[in-house]
View 1 (cartoon, rainbow, N blue to C red):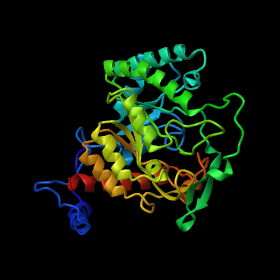
View 2 (view 1 turned 30 degrees about the vertical axis):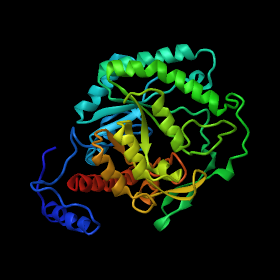
View 3 (view 1 turned 60 degrees about the vertical axis):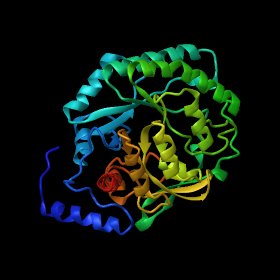
Length: 373
């Protein structure tokens, strides 16, 4: 992106560094020029170009313009039904490229028998392997996935934040006694670990072969049981266990500093653990206030929670992370709520204005971290 010098940039950028020095952060290296921009050797901010909040659920010119107007050049999206087709993936990638956007990450799903250890899982896994190969040939960098037996979203509710903005709160007590769903049943922790091990041993070698990385999102909410089923990614110990199954950078996680704090863990130390092992393949960047770890917390605006968001960003830079950072879960703002057809996708959630706030905040943290590296 071609830089343009304005009075605001010329004054504000240098003024940022002395203020950081007051907090013990190093000044910018000699010769640093502004603006500091994202590139091949830095983390990249990204947004989700699907789901309706940016593009009415479609890959269209209007949605991509909204993304680019925020200075974002990388996006993620939900993937098609498995098995993925290389030609279709290339069309998606090229459509984004024409708008100056890199399609970096697609979510893969559609393998419930694999999760539950039921007949038909080998057929599902073969479709996942085909999809990984198609993604590698098409040039996709990351495939994200979940491995829930069930996700206990029934405990979410809305709280009011500053100025009446929407916050997303969670209370395990609201849903902990809900019965299992008949179509899912219950699944204990040992069987789920057995199932995900079977899955990873089948797909990670294919990732290594074609140069694609997998990113497993942690359990969110990270409650102990979800309608009677255990969760394989609900503790820090389980995150560490996951990456030990196969020693490959392709077997990685989506590092979420918000979920890390929900667990009662130190987000910076956890970032350092996985970053130093090159197992962070995608990042979710958000803040929370935790009342009781794993079971009672509120998702906040990025500047008002318990996570030191600058320290997290600085650690990502120190670990030489060059993947994507998604400043997700925008707060519910009146401007978004007043738009025709607005729909909140979770209690207290927002839309484009909320994303604009998150992106601006995250970019300031990223530029400051890069300047003080």
